[in-house]
Amino acid sequence: MTNSWLTEAQPIWGNVADVIGSRKDLKVEEPALSWQRQWPRWQLIEALLQGTYGMQQAGRSWLPQEPLEENESYAIRLSNSTLTPYYINMEAMLAGMLTRKPIRLENVSDTITEHLYDADLQGNNLDRLIHDFARTKLLRYGLAGILVDYPVADDGSQDLNRPYWIAYGAPDIIGGRFDVVGGSMQLTQLRLHERITIPYGDFGEEVASQIRVLEPGRWRIYRRTHETGGNFKLLPDGKGEGTTTLDRIPFSPCYTQKLGELEARPPLEEIAWLNLKDYRRESDFANQLHVAALPLKFGFGFPSDMSEVAGGPDTLIGAPADARVQMLESSGSSYQWQMQHLERIEKQINHLGVATILGQKMVAETEASKAIDRSQGDASLQQIAQAMQDCIDNCLRFHAAYLSETQPGNCLISRNFVSAKLDSQQVSTILSGYNSAKPLYTQETALRMLNDGEWLPADFDVEEEILATEALAEQRIQEAQDAMNGAARALPGVTATDQQRPDSEAS
Image (tube, rainbow, N blue to C red):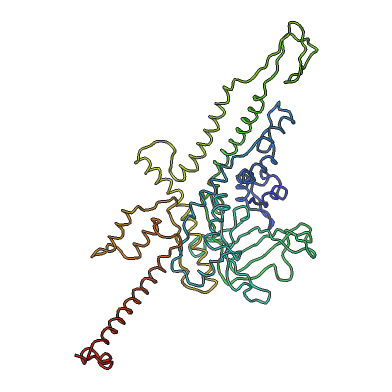
């Protein structure tokens, strides 16, 4: 899904080049300079997300017309051009790898854990929310963030009775200010763009844009509708501003390739450009095949005023005595170079997307080289996973602060980005290390190793399993004790009074 907010950027703010310089003041809806610098990088990505239909609709913006190419010929070539979804697939693959395993919550209260089963109040639990956050926002733009909100009703009560999380991508984070507070750099002002649907008439609706302005302990909302004449205005009747119980802005930004505060570079930008290159080359190749597949009639010795000669399976050609007609067709020698070039682009995309991120090259190499490349690639993806983990931890703190809880807990995102299932010998080694006379590690460590090695079910919870096994052990001890007591009562000469006495008295 593309961000339609981008389509409004150009008509609202004009040419980006005109506003890159310094400006003394900005309206509430005008993006900061950091947003302006990032905006050109998003345009191609947004176009690729539209697929073949979107690229064809964009026409000459992404598929240039050749200098001597006629409009009709260009229209035919454009209609035959298709986009191979390299970028879309790469984005989905990496997001799936980052969230391949459920997020593990540690020391998080039962109340917050229950809230996170519907983290955004739209039916998405934490895992689904973070997967969408990673794919459609963080990996796409390199910058994203999560706001932990707790709306207040008109009567001053907590409207929803619980906090909830809202994810924003870079295009909707239009400005912010930072300052050193308490020895650390903190947000002191944040402007977020939101798109909402409000009722219009009995059955209609109106899509409105609004800007949410957040400051420590304070918020404001400016909305643009037809009633406001297309201008952003503070909501009336006290609905446009209020206070919060927090002394910080409950927003946690997340970066992949950070360039500055609220400014980053899309991590898959170069793959997007290679995808565009493949789209253009594929268009040339398809057009070449279309033209060359139809042999060209060429006549020798025809009068100069005879420009065309009809030809076909049921057509008789009349020609002067010395004239002759031949069919010219391509030898096809240039096709292989086009195909090789397309294959080279595909390998480049694979190398950038897989080798750079995962360290996996599709060429023969030594085991030592593979280990080094894999380690470097894992480190790249681990940095993104660590940034996501820090973002979630910050949100847990905001969530706990709203509820006046002192223990927010933390999370853990798995670093096993690809399948690494343990074999039976490795499992036996882990179990023997735990079951030995002098255990090498605890039951929890053994279970976690088996869980990380994908030997246990995907929904396996180590902590719950430990509690369950401890309860089961106590139950079995009690059952054994009851069985022993029952057997003792069956012995001749032993009365119920004797069984109730202490062992010393019974003896």
